[in-house]
Image (cartoon, rainbow, N blue to C red):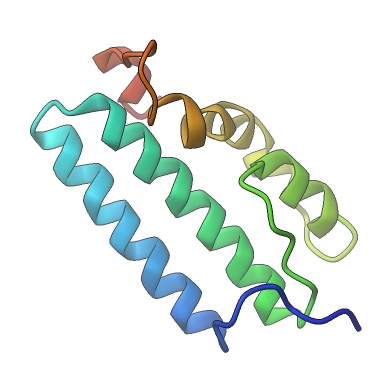
Length: 111
């Protein structure tokens, strides 16, 4: 087995971090701060997926690309239900953090 990139030691730690990002996304949305809302929504999804890697004692890839994470999880977990959401969320991890992009309310609102 490959050495893990991250130093977190259990699934609960990943899920705790994911829950913090979910809370931050909700708080950002409540204040109509769409860029941080999108970023934290992506981070929540990423950390949730990485919790699955941890739970299955798999190498955790160093990537923010949710679709890549799903590709690597697919042999051990049915990921079909979250494919569309992952494709949307993957762009939020980078775009929302830099100048030249501003999210609209409709883009940060759950579909």
